[in-house]
Amino acid sequence: MPNTVHFNDNYPLISQSDALYARAAGLIPAYTQTLAKGPTQYVAGVAPKYLQRGQGARVWDVDGNEYIDFNAGIGPISLGYNDEAVNAAIVAQLNDGITFSLVHPLEVEVAELVRTHVPGAEAVRYSKTGAEVTSAAVRLARAYTGRDKILCCGYHGWHDWYIGVTARDWGVPTAVKDLTHTFAYNDLDSLTAALDEDTAAVILEPMTFDFPQDNFLHQVREACDANGTLLIFDEMWTGFRWAVGGAQAYFGVTADLACFSKAIANGMPLAVLTGRGDVMALLDEEVFFFSTFGGEALSLAAAKATIQVMVEQDVPAYLAAQGQKLIEGYNQLAQELAFNEYTYCKGHPARSMVVFEPAAGDPLLLKSLLQQELIRRGILWSGFHNICYSHTDEEIAYTLAAYAETLPLLVEAIARNDVAQRLRGRPVQPVFRKTSDFNTRPQKR
Image 1 (cartoon, one colour):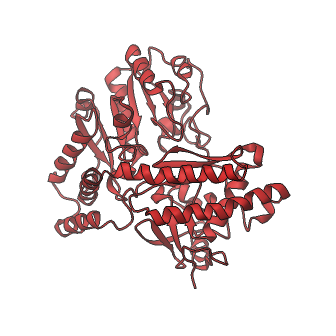
Image 2: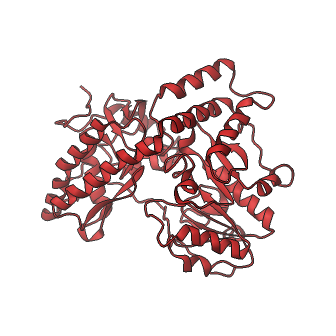
């Protein structure tokens, strides 16, 4: 019998996952289209590699094992798998058609919704992925300012202008790398030291897991204004989760351009670039950013339904309430075990992260052991709590009960110095992502 969401006696059997994995060898580079979904981010031999279906906040792998999912499709599942309102909107549009030879009315309707709820959204352009809209925002900023240099903080996709400042920079020309520099979050000095007369834009994730300190975002806004530099918010995670209007609404700071994807369409592929009308107006003729599938109607129908549910049900408030229970519950358990100096949960309640301090041992090994034991108990977890509207009180309570049973195992393993020996396969591997102080380049080229 496949495992379910219970304190199962055995680890899940994953023979069908392994069979598909073998078929993908040499056929699909890295075995995955999305790094965070790939096998390197899970304990080998224990974690499923392929999911078959989802319902609400739960997923089933190809072997039939059931899990509470805290990955949310790596962000896009904001309401829940198979949400009725979103599915109905998709089916209704599917019966009319998917992609057309002229502009579709949904392009106007969704743009009006975005303008209504997102601060500073005077004009709207659609695409399919977050990397596309962040790259378009960078091109717009360069065109508008007549400058070349970009300062970034966070993760902004796979395109050349950004990926050149990461460890995975092969294939990016040096001339392109030299145009992008990084600065550290919550460190205004690192930003102002790099700002100069050639800085076209500052682009950052307005929040990952640390809240802005000392009005950091407001100070970034002021520094950009003083330097004639455009401010771009990459709201892939904060958009429609922190608030329907994203971080701009939540923190009270309006960027010149803002980029959204993930949560806006509950799993359908849609990305949005929006912002100041005078900047966006360059997309009429001067700046080229068009694509065949930008106006694809199924995703727009899903976005319209998703935004309407979010507004009518105040979904961000629900995400925050459910996520806060996990943050407080985890930290309380750690404190009761006298383990709170070594592990804690932090972040916005809608998207929090479990942290292991190096003093307790190798953080990746500890994360791997906790992941392994949560998977056994029917929880799909990769270190984060990405909350969706379908996470019920019972599922949150069950997750805390699972933590209550698994955290003492970590304490025991640390005491016995056998964390690695308890793993049933290769541990979670590191990724190149950093949100601050990574490949910081000098001020002048």
